[in-house]
Length: 146
Image (cartoon, rainbow, N blue to C red):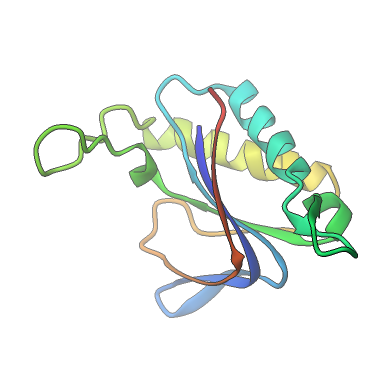
């Protein structure tokens, strides 16, 4: 699994003009699922991301996790994160998981984060989405399960 993690002051996702998920301060996670990913990958990423010390403490240092900051998480499925652009001009998505597998692991990731006490909002799987965010910092990281 591959995730682009952005610290945000707010973020939302819209499908056909309707907001389907929105958060205030916290993390926007764009999540891509690979063919060989398993539930262990989803669990690992959920734990890793909520524990990343990327929120400021009283001294202004990135020293607090999402759990410590009390922020929320918006997760949006994004198979294009698995796009391989090394050859030619058209990305290959051969390593992306089939939609049924990807959705199951996407939902598992969200459930694992919720189980840790974090408020989780989601996009709509397999929909054309518009994602809005205000990146705080900016802080943007790529986190992979392997």
